[in-house]
Amino acid sequence: MREHSDIVIVGGGPVGTTLALLLADGDFSVQLLEARADLTRPAHRRTLALSYGSRLILERLGVWSDLSEVTPITTIHISQRGGLGMAWLRATEEKLPALGYVVDYAELDAALHARLRVSGAAVVSGARVDEVRAASGYAMLKVSRAGDVMPVTARLAVVADGGAGPVQRVSRDYDQHALIAAVTTELSHNGCAYERFTPDGPAALLPQGAGFALVWTASPARVQALLALPDAEFLHALHQHFGDRVGQFLSVAQRASFPLGLRYAAQTTRPHTVLIGNAAQMLHPVAGQGFNLGLRDAWELAARIRTSTREALGDAGMLATYRNARRLDTRGGIFFTDLLVRLFSNDNALLHHGRSVGLAALQALSPVKRFVARRMIFGARG
Image (cartoon, rainbow, N blue to C red; front, side, top):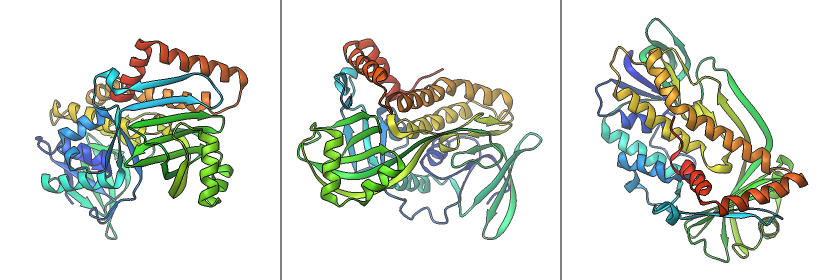
């Protein structure tokens, strides 16, 4: 572990690793610190929904072709239970091969780290960063490794996982859990993802392989009751909840759950330090924006770093330029996701009617539909 680098990246998850790869052929010394002791061990398997814009970033890194478990999303169907309004988003309308893709987190993590090893980037595993604070002209990191604690300095510290150091965060508990599972259905998905809004919260079916990845949002008590059901009873409850659009639900596997909330940093930069990815924002999965926002954080930050001088790394001007470039995309993603959860997760009769009208308008007004689709695919630029 080097005592000083131009740039230190805290966190070797997909967002931190993406940034390290984007900077691997640059002029600055970069060191990535990861708390996990062995980056070759498989990560936890879970489903990720990547936008087409995220695919372009991964193609730039040479990682996309290394992924084998990829299911394109060519259509998104949006509806609400008990309402007449619905909308369809189609890749053909955007003149793209897909709106997004469903991939396995563990495979993506492994592919990124395989590229990282080939790149020759400086990676230190088993290094836990306990604190990041500003010093005179640089960031000071307190790093624990193998029982020892040592200081590491950098012109720019990028916190990509968690949030080392004192960070003021805004948080909201939605009082919801997400039940995730793999399900098969009577009808083929044909590349269609379904977002179904209900008073309990949204339910999503994402095409994955020959079946679907399910994300079913409900109260914590309801989710625990659903987890306890035998498979046949669970499939019946799911059909009652979701409807007939994919026919009967035939099988379910890998049921699990996790709590949902909103959590983001009030300020994503401080002197010689910037927060990206999960360290900057953690969103409800309703619109599938959280991970894609993190990749766009890494892409934009890498662009700002490549045009910076060594002396300007992490200074107020550089960080303000990055922050301003990301503001519209990040705030828009947070606002849109939070609005969807609060607007659709209730049984208010007046709002129910308004939602039906809104979905019908989205379907009927091509410019509005295109605006929503492009923001989901590519984000927004300031």
